[in-house]
Image 1 (cartoon, rainbow, N blue to C red):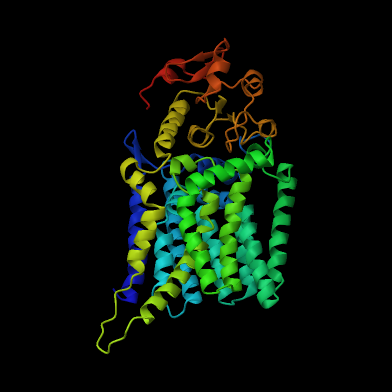
Image 2: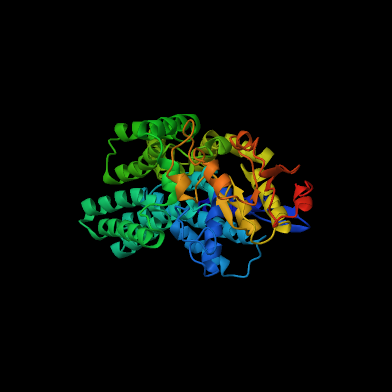
Length: 504
């Protein structure tokens, strides 16, 4: 397989697979095909929809702004999609297709970065780009609607332009956009900016990183009344740094070590053996390690056990590791082949990049992809169930009925009802309270006395382990056969209809 055909298949095969992944996530409700994003992404979609409806960045229309998201730039992009005439059943499809395009562009960018670092190599670019094309967490989180793909692309694009010594103004703008998409992109952005400061005495990128962070913090304080998002308080506060980092280390060892450790050790050994301690290798290694340290600092993510892989924070740094792996593999391969006797009529060997990429992918992503082949995408079954529940609630409640949820994505978005978030991702009173039990990001804070007894929602849509004992002797609510709690005196609910279970 020559260079041109390899490069062509490097894009065609992932494109076909991404479309298959998206198509396989479709489901039917009343003969209509639906698509939905992962539950966290649907929280961003709710804010985006309200912004597109000219209600502002609000959780509930008519209430003060609350920042229950950490991906401002992604929310703004989703709001643009909501200005287009997409039905609620199909707008998630638009997000997924655009994410597929982002992934394909990212493959090209990773290929070009590796080519820039190894201009004579026929192996390294195909190897690094081939692995990144099918790396499970990157594909999964991107195609299920999170900002991971866009964030990864922007950092890689800034890295490519930096290595090509392109206009620093353009690099600064890309870094600013990445930080706007999600502020923790400042970690990788700062490393790229420091590299430019050392290598080319360019101060503009590092000024841009700090200026962009400052502007976003100012906007958040001005618009939402707080420098930091509600989600920060909900996920990070209420526990000691030791408790968070202990959890972060445990999930890293259990779920991310398979993705990272073998490649990392090979790279470190190669860097030492070849004395390849350039600023470029340090930059790539720094981007990867910064994401790992950040993941440990925040205590990991909520879905490692479901995805059985490195979380989305670490995922953003993995292309840098793949690029380094391709680079060092090329050095080793060159040494091995040049050491062999040469003959005048010897035919050139086939490019080993593709089989090497397959071996790497089977090692780091084989298990989650095998699980996907049998069970479809992680979290999808629960997401589909919540979409059906949301439409069931919408059909059997008045538009002014207030619902309470623990999973704050699909149910609020598709039911289009005022919503109380029982876990506090969209409620600063709960978010700033103390955590309950062992640290588990996003699932440790609730205050049912406040959320249920005081706020009196008409419907409690979903269950959570601590809820049932709290509601056991609560005479103000009725538990329906559909496992939904309804306030006994509400006039805004069709009890008979809501009690039906055939929506499942």
